[in-house]
Length: 74
Image 1 (cartoon, rainbow, N blue to C red):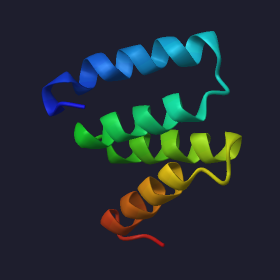
Image 2 (image 1 turned 180 degrees about the horizontal axis):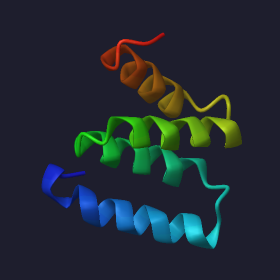
Image 3 (image 1 turned 60 degrees about the horizontal axis):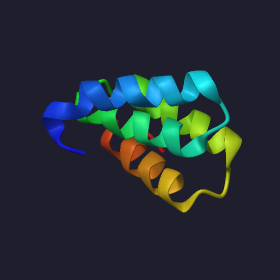
């Protein structure tokens, strides 16, 4: 995802989530796009939501870990 297209990506993920809120990939990718826009808390909340849906998602777990480290948390 290109940094300049993060806003467009968030809109697309929001549309996918509106159709089916149980799509962990959409939540995780939304979180990544928000993170790229430096909307850190929102990004982490989206990744956390992805993990509520699919707790064993390797990509979401890795992203969550990276986000928490950058925010200074555990």
